[in-house]
Image 1 (spheres, rainbow, N blue to C red):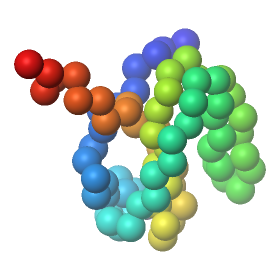
Image 2 (tube, helix red, strand yellow):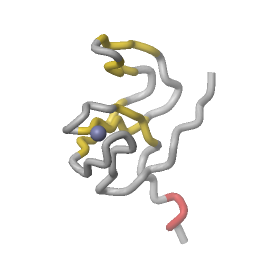
Image 3 (cartoon, rainbow, N blue to C red):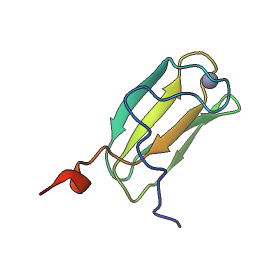
Image 4 (cartoon, rainbow, N blue to C red):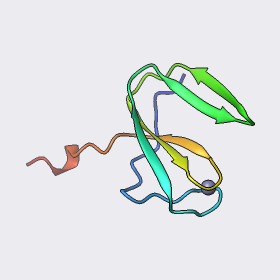
Length: 74
Ligand SMILES: [Zn+2]
């Protein structure tokens, strides 16, 4: 199992499937995974907290890492 998530893509992400910029974001805690694939919902276990993105147009869903300000700490 990989624990790597794509990096946070900003406050206005763009759907990689259809190019739509109307994307909803939802926080998911450790252990929960719900992805609708092919009309069915897939449940799984994820080892990280993450942001769940869903395109409002084509319903493509993906996960990203949290927007943590770690690199800005001085
Ligand atoms: Zn889309």
